Image (cartoon, rainbow, N blue to C red; front, side, top):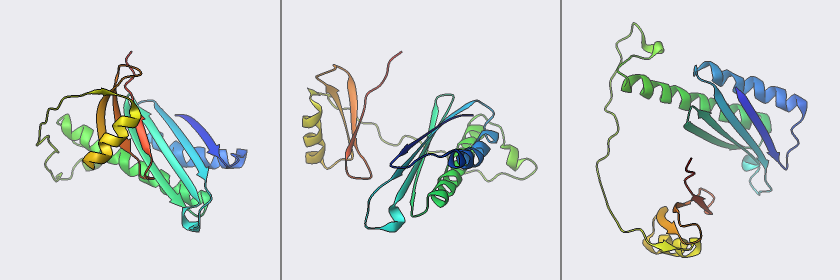
Length: 178
């Protein structure tokens, strides 16, 4: 597994690096394909001591992105929790992947698998996408009371997706075309 660790307001010591590699190195056994993982650790000043450290893990497995975030008062505990969340996400992804291909999961071999309905698209909607700057897209999104907004960025001429983050700020996604 290719693991990149970055710290914001946190020094990534060799001991911490070794601990992280031990915890997140276990993720590689769940997926046979080569994994690229990125861990970002942030220490923030907050009144709530239970929210002091933030650990975000993003795993790329052959184009499939899985992401987990956890907050906590102790750095090592936060890393443990985010690793556990990512492990559950990988297991859920594996279960869906095997089910879609018509196979059974290796964990369910010999046991009657409980089948649950797959999620499906239940609504289809078309709308006109207008060209505008990002700040106008923020205003439009707020006027519509949506958590995301699709628009053509007049600075780049490309399709962009504006979304509201958990911290109430905004994120902007612009597709990268090969």
